[in-house]
Structures are given as structure tokens and as C-alpha cells.
Amino acid sequence: MGRYASSRNFGYGKQLAHAGKAALRDYYGQGHHSTVATHTQRWRPFVDWAREQGVRDLSQIDSRDLATAYAEHVQARVEAGTLAVSTAQNRLSTVNTTFAALRGDRHVKISPSQYAGPRSSVRTSAPAALDTPRVQGAIAALQEADLPRAAATLELARAFGVRREEAVKADLDRWSREAARYDEATESYRINVLDGTKGGRDAPRWIPVGDAQRQALASALAARPEGSRNLIAPDESYAQLAISRGGEIAQGRDILKQHGLPGYHDARAAYACQRYEQITGHPAPAVAGERLASKDDDLKARVIISAELGHGRIDVLVSYVGSSR
Image (cartoon, rainbow, N blue to C red):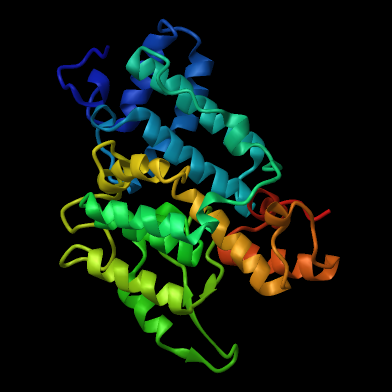
């Protein structure tokens, strides 16, 4: 494994880009030059993304967790319409191959079609996080386990429908100011999700604010480290907090599962289902087992919720709230 004096990046050197290229050359026996060149080119977007997460040494972080987080990032870009499915699948295939070259095993094996293919899986059951007592129990258990930032992440995801990264990186001071400001035009209180968003989308993403949102904000403010505007401490990176196996957010997953929650993302689906009922006056199809709202109301809800979740296509909503048929 590796052929350099430095133990960083599985012994392939200090630079992520160079390490991947060197490992690929060994993997293909110093041949298949065109294949190595293609993988090297597709490896670069992963390298750029990993650096943004604060990752400098791939051997110091769980490879599978990191690859999965990247796959979710790529998936979000596909859903936002800023990355072609074919390009996304190629990039994820390269991640599998390059990690195999670096590690010398098949520990990393993510499905390109699952993450990059057209997301058409229709939700047919209610998200577990729609059960408020269940979520509250998980939040309490996380706090008791001395994982306050994991608890805050879950609460923010459920209240605002944000992704894990968006919850962790949210500028809590700005959110608090916006949540306290009444917008005369919309006759509501709202916050704009800007930090940690994926897919290259910069469109306004306003989320309505009520009692649940204010409570989630208060919890997050209480949990955030001193000297930080978000849940990341000044001396740590997002990867250390949320992706690393020893990170607080990752540690919280076992507790979520103990309370019947498959992960933080389930809270996002619960938010979507709750908003669907608020907008249409009917339970989401995934909850009711069928579409009870009129076609016009159903479409209206999907357009609104899609924007609030940060998606560029309303067809993605079938995996959150169920079929529109």
C-alpha cells in the first residue's frame, strides 16, 4: 500500500490529487494510460470537494463515510439540475475505483445509479421522524449522551427541512435575526437557507418560521461552540464533526437507529410531509396511502416544498411525500 515515505493518503503522498493518480497507476500496472487519465480527471472534483470539507489525509477518515457524503453531494447536484446523470455516475464510479487503488480493498462500494440516477423511488410509508414523540425521545437521548450538536442537527433538520450539512453550517446568528423579522410582503417570519447548500444553487430558499423553528434555533444556539457562528468549533472542520467516525454527528447515528430513525435525512422527509398537509389540508400520499388533495393543490404543494428543500425538480418530491397519482 503506497510507495512514498509519507504515510498520508495510504502512503501515496501528501496531495490528494497526486495520491489518487499514483494509486491508479499502480492499480493498472503502469499501463492503461487512457483509463488512468480519465479516472484522474474525474477524481479532481472529489479532491476539490474533500478539501472544502477540511479533508487532507484520506487515511485519517472513514473512507466509506466520506464517499457516501460525496455521493449525497453529487446526488443533490443532479437533483438541482446542475450536473448530468451520466457525468455524476462516472464521477462516483471513479471514486469507487480510486479508493480501491488507494486502499487495496473494496471497502468503498457506493452505487452510482442509486445516487446519480433519476431519483424516482416513490415513498409509500410515512417517515419515522413524522412521529414527534419519537424525535423528541431521540433528541433527549442525544443530549443525555453528551452529543448536543447531534441533537441540534436533528432538531434543525426536522424543523427546517434542511440537510445535515446545512444544519451544521447554518449561520445561527443570521437565522435568528431573520426569524425575528416580520416580512410584510408575505405576512410571515422566514429564514433563508444559504450555508452548506449543495448543487450550486443560489436561488432564495425561504423557510417559514413558527414555534417549532424558534425552539430548534434556541437549542442550536445553546449547543454551538463558543466563538462560532454555527455548530462547528473554531478549531475543527466540518469533516471532523460530521463525517469522521469519531465525530459527534456520526456518533449520534446509533442513537437515532435505537429510536427507530434511519438517519438525519429522515427528518427532512418528515418536514416535507408536514408541509404538504399544511398547504393542502390533507396528509401526504405517503402517509395516507393515496393522494387525497386535488391535483391543483397537490402540484402547488410540490412546487412550494421543492423550493424549500432546495431542489430544482418537483419530480424529486415523490421520494419525500409519495406519488402524485
